[in-house]
Length: 263
Image (cartoon, rainbow, N blue to C red):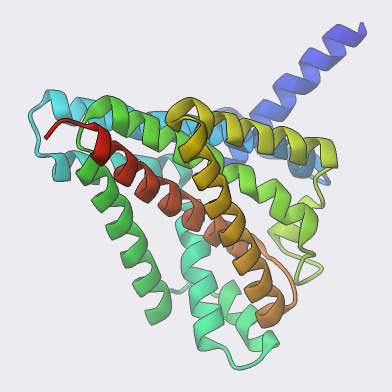
């Protein structure tokens, strides 16, 4: 096998692993995602996010063509993104809030986060997350800007995950995040670049810089919080980080497009 063929094979394998991990798209078995395969393929997470965003955008466009109210189209679009990922990140958000809010000790917090049942803190976090995302899309209310916002938000939010996995140590020796391992710096850089390009292409330089500042601030805050609460990150914390990033970018897009769209 030539170097070019080997490189193309690895590119395709990484893409399949990244998309299969982040979405429920039927790309084959997840059995290959053992060892550090997820960490190696983490650079593709923004690409997987863009596909999720495009899924939501397509549903929003269809709702608009059927003359649905912007609020109804936004509900269907967000529901489509949740279905596309199997509510992977929403589950992490809920578990993180349940653990951090309901546990008294580090051990108890981690125990709660492992529990598949959802508690009051998790319900409240999910409710706020859904309302903010629905509200942002309802404000934009035009299919093309909605598509730009969804793709940029989902791609850039997932671009923060490899950075977080690299810089914040796992809170425990088992679990999804610990098994995934540390992404190589090259993968971190590639994911960050893809996320930044998505923001730049969608919003322009000034707004993209604001979005990057917001994402960085959210990452630093969550890193401090998770190190204080449980001594490191878990798969649930990564899900919470994605949700925070997605919300921040959608809210920024709503503010940006609201000033640009005609009354």
